[in-house]
Image 1: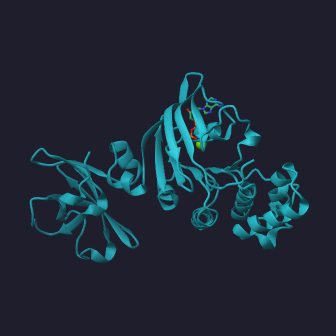
Image 2 (image 1 turned 120 degrees about the vertical axis):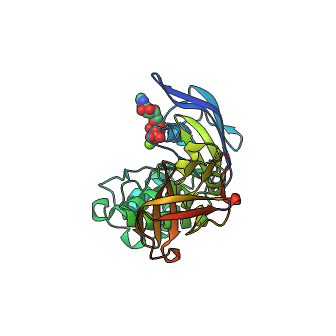
Image 3 (image 1 turned 120 degrees about the horizontal axis):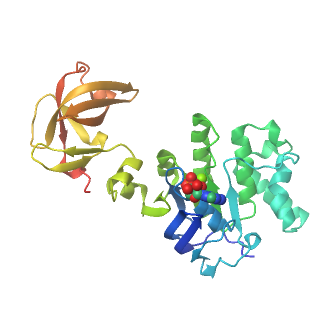
Length: 328
Ligand SMILES: Nc1ncnc2c1ncn2[C@@H]1O[C@H](COP(=O)(O)OP(=O)(O)O)[C@@H](O)[C@H]1O
Ligand SMILES: [Mg+2]
């Protein structure tokens, strides 16, 4: 079995249907060595199915899968050297943290001394050395998920697959675990495919995002590419808020809420006059919701940049720079 962390996954024209639902529709994708690649999409878009096909829990109807040029279609799960982490930690309740993490290595019949060394390394990576003798029910949700992570990385997988691993955690813990996963990725330089429906999480973690909808890849690229140059309205909306505005002169523009500047008078052709419907204070940012020719416009500003005297029902000019418009 190869013991390398780095790998390239090549997926070509994958298809998978369940009865009359096409869960994967002609999926082609390359994941580079060491890349953190996120599958992002709404519920039912095919993310889990794609992970399960890669892991070998489902076989595709069509298409091929390769790791470093080696065809996976006929390779049994046990020989794929893939680590998996799920949303529900799936730990063995009757085993200690150490035993949970050692399990995969015991299955590989490694020497006890080697198992010990590797388990210690893995526990150190997820910062759980002091909890090694505890049982899952004596750990917090975040700690349990770290055990699941240690268990997945201890086998030194060619590929690490994670399916909404932080879905069950509350917001603060999620943020903390996101930072830990990012750090872990740096430390072990693993190739990771990470499933989430949370665009902020995907943007924070990923080198690349693959956006899925109804079993198809809609767009794949860096976070910046998807955010600044979305291929269509669906991508633009998924990656953050977006305004699609029909101007008085008939032009259509697409613009992010943060790309406006607010002024009390018009200073250039590139601006619209809006009536303020609401001002929502969100801490460092304030969201302005306005109306322009019966269209609702959303603009965000740093709270400290906003004139404190502006009020609901005031008319203001939202000015935009041509360079900030999204080409759709
Ligand atoms: N085992 C299954 N049997 C029948 N339909 C399934 C099965 N697994 C997934 N599907 C269907 O395939 C589609 C994609 O599901 P899934 O991959 O779980 O999406 P996601 O993880 O993005 O929410 C959905 O319409 C889902 O109902
Ligand atoms: Mg899913």
